[in-house]
Image 1 (cartoon, rainbow, N blue to C red):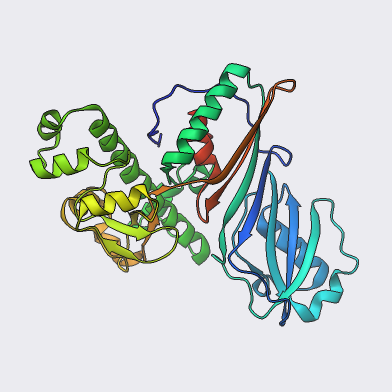
Image 2 (cartoon, one colour):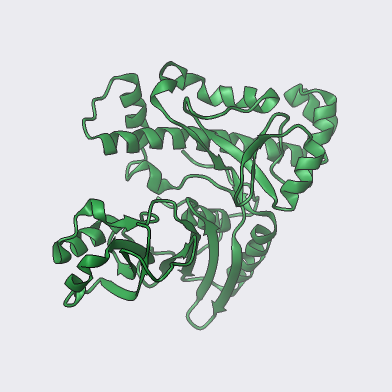
Length: 362
């Protein structure tokens, strides 16, 4: 599926290769490690290996079983990654002679708890774009400035959907009982891809609606949507590009609880101040749903999965996020545009890059 961009600039000509020199990811830990405890914490730099590949090589060398390793997040194969993992402290001695050309242990410390998925604030990214001329470099700087101020839609990236982009089809087939998947881990993975697909469809449509509100007057919008005139007026007056609907599920940002929007004027200001954000739906029986217009809009995208909703847990995901600490440099002699930024956990640097350049990664 082609995701709808929220910015309106044309595609910017760049060359990007997701290799270990031009794409670097560094985890931002959720907390400081205590320095004591029964778990060894390793800060590791890996190149061109998935997290699972790296853990397997460490396990082969140390005898640590895969289930005894801990990690905060799984990282892709392509590029360079700095991340923390945990393993039993009693087996630290097995690392004395460990060497691998693509794995380097940068730091060691200890902690009382095993690392678990999600135990990170987010990730810091470095990206180098090549073959960038001075004019396009200026365009990139301007778009970065806009995205720093306004944020961007938190789509799931292409990685979620597999090489052919059809993992979600398999997930739907599993839920419908048309496809058998014995491996529980893979079954959950494909179902998650299906939920992510529905989220992206919903978010793309909401971007389209927000674009219309930016382009048309109140009378034209009333004819387009037939919303109550007071709602049209409230939505039109919102400062943010992404328009909040009555009954929207909101989430405190970057941490906190979800709640239903009952006062659009008040909550849109908090949204503009980055205190809260919209929380989109990944459908499932354990997940709360929005009410009012926002709830009706969600149903348009979840009605197809109602027959098997009990087979999915579901959750909420930030629909709109902001990158922090954006920095950029243009090296004209090399025609390189380098920039770095931080994102909340679970967000995709490639989605940020696509909104920046308006070139879709495949």
